[in-house]
Length: 526
Image (tube, rainbow, N blue to C red; front, side, top):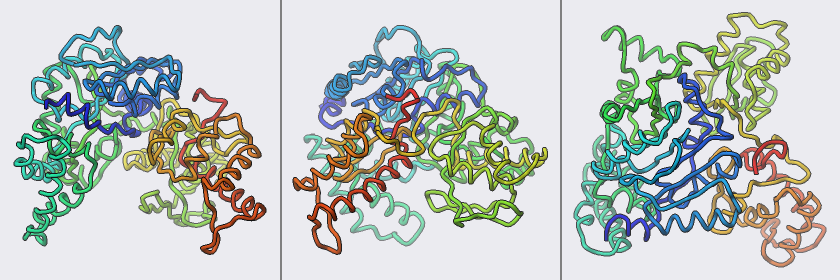
């Protein structure tokens, strides 16, 4: 069975991530100095689009943009086209395609996305892929191209070599996956070096991958062409096709590139003098096993570190939460902010503290820098910020951006800050609830859902008001489709059910706002 047949049998799991959204590509391209196209009317290509799970949400969100997806697996393309028909989308086409052939896709593309392909195919296809990107990427365009990255990938590479005996077996893919799981269990049972650095790393890798999906096993561990690259080698590959590395799509994977990293820069600078490859050096200290590289036809590089004033052209949002319910923003007293991953940060500057409080209040809606500055100035009671305060604010915001605790947008997505009277979940998420336990948000993230969400989300279509939604959900409880319990006992009295339901609906709608699942009807989302 060749790899085309295998991908038709075991679908590649194409799940959305913010770093593969065209808004991220547009923003980072702009911050690298490229003349970026408006995402609302852009031409977008995804190579290896699978079932369209990454491309379709963007097609729903930007009805005036043009989307094309290609994949070698016809069964996955069939699934994508079924969803396109269900959603009645006219701005997207998905087709069977191969980068080794001239697909005649028409004009060049503003944005190209290619995830899970470069280091998962043989060298011949790698060269064909880069030539394809060179052929179809606009001179001002940006391409997302992911790859397994060294040095962080080395432990996974060890596991890949360990399962080689299974990879060589001439058996059906499902049986091969089962055998690979059995082998990993056996390896764990005889691992004798689990308390020393090598053994600890290997044990963690074995345990982490044991219960991964069948798609992961097929695409990664049992793939005979799986490989990895250093950032330096990746850059060399690009040069052969007149392509240039810009940055990583996830700023936190580019230490010292967007904002200063004093410890790294000072210590290395004392030894090396001028540091020209800080990102490669940082990779050895903070190794990544995966990179989502942004590339272009024009040589360019991140500019925020040299020109922090560029942040003033951006839309900004951040989920950081002050730990205190009423943080002191009127003095120089330290206020601690917490991230969703429970990292904490202390700030004492009045303007900075006020800006973070403002951003928390507008989350998840991005706001313009000038709006942020005006609101923070007003909130803090500062009459007129000094140049020093303004400089510190810019540098601090960029630092949080570098650490993935703050997001920048050249163009904003539109989501609700508060649930409306007729709340609406965008169409693709409403389609997803019938077949899986997560939905895609406007932030291009996966939001886990339970049975209550599966009953609620389909009726949040922008046409039903709160009263109609409550009646519909109450009927689902009364029919037995949902159950309500209090103190371990099932609740069946209509009055009690209505009270529980009203509270639960309010809680769910607040969560949908927080996760950017509800669209703003005054915006462009569909």
